Image (cartoon, rainbow, N blue to C red; front, side, top):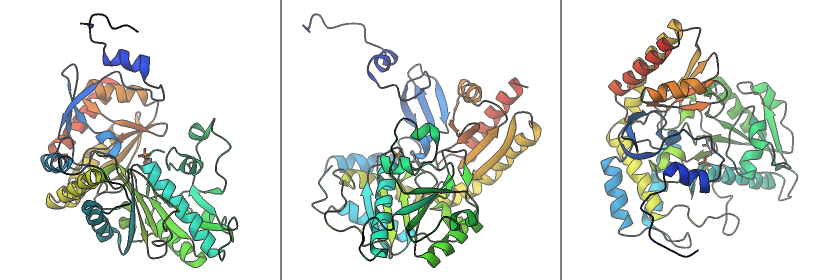
Length: 408
Ligand SMILES: *Cc1c(COP(=O)(O)O)cnc(C)c1O
């Protein structure tokens, strides 16, 4: 095409999306351009309380000064080197994660899905070792009904939800499905071909469904008895979101493998898999890798995120601030039983199950200045950044109340 005069009419973002961006999202009709702390602005100048946190990613809120300074400094020093070389930040961040997770080793990648894929590959290698080196004998992984483990082929095959698997069969074989919070249903599926059990400590996409402490302890025992890896997907519920660094800590168990991502980079794409002694040495040169995982820049963002979580006491803050917030939400449940069916979750990962279609509720909240995410079929998911203040939490309840009153 010949270039003529530069157009003076700038194509709107909405038009650009309509014309050029794939249509795999039902997006809200708005364009976000700026953020600070818990607040985010659209291109029309409207300000919102952001209780999506980019789906549990922006743990420190938007543009936390320590995070920004760290990333800016690192960007001017060294952004990317391959994993064929060491870089100081990756070593440091691995050490910090081991400090939270326990003795073991860390593999870095770029997303939750990649962390889940790496975890599933560890299960395969564990199975081969269990079967005395033979492939194809011990490879099965038991997952929970309604689980979500990402959109790549391994994780998607581990995600027993029709809406996610439809159109993509044949899937990766070897995934069996147990009932959440029913250890016997998992135990009944275990045989010599089983390599691992994989669950989310709190199911994030299926409506905020927590594993009970007894269930996690029961799975731990089952895995010990049958030499299975207990693999926990903490991609959404981990990194301080529930008031503990990992959500499984509430149950007092230690898994063999942990997948994490979302909140770990405070906004920078980063994923990680921690493996304890039983699985830490399964990956050897050549059998797994990634070009981008663990770059100096991504790990600087991870380190800055952990710095802020520690220095600002965000574990204690989430634990303390969520008490009154949960109480206020449960009061709404009492006052509006015609609209609200349940309030559940932990810390700053909360699901409010509605009695009807949630689409209109998400819109009603947005129109009142509160951004939330849906989860499952009928759950409104509240994911404030870990730095959200008691006043901002209370404001979210006020906005919710006003939407409830308007519909009653
Ligand atoms: C979001 C999520 C994933 C996938 O992470 P991506 O970064 O979107 O690939 C996997 N598991 C759980 C539990 C998640 O919440």
